Image (tube, rainbow, N blue to C red):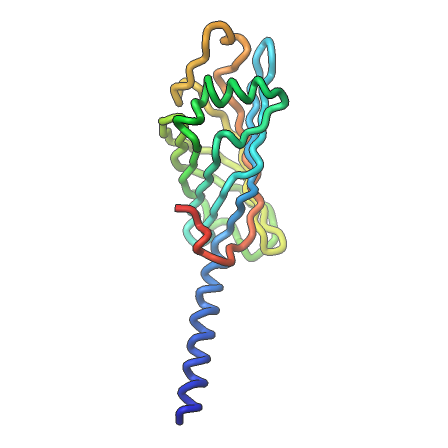
Length: 195
């Protein structure tokens, strides 16, 4: 009888572990997502890329979260990077940017079938001490059990109280084009999810 109970306990433990593993497969995650931005202005174009964006997507609910440290943006010119962090973004005071939202058409994405799916995303973008609603469209690419989220949208500097000094007003556009490219894998350990 004791052996029988041990076998049942072992089977139940295995089922519980597999159940947790299956739920973890519904969550996709990366710490190496990419976000770039581009500003076209009459005197000089400004662009930068960030290669350490944390992105979490829950395929069950469509909940999506992206987080990054602003100092992680890399510029071609060191002086631009310095001005970005010190003068415009005030990165010491406001160190991170974050998006929390949801895929509005999550039910139209088949996470178990390879393909490219249209995505509509709505949520809240927070940085530089401001939070604004953001709605945009993009793509979800499912391939080999992995998921990639892509989107391009525009951010207005005035919406986030980013002041541009008069001396360089002609160099910095007020419309910033943002491109998101986050390739995610199934999350193996749910304790890694940022809160």
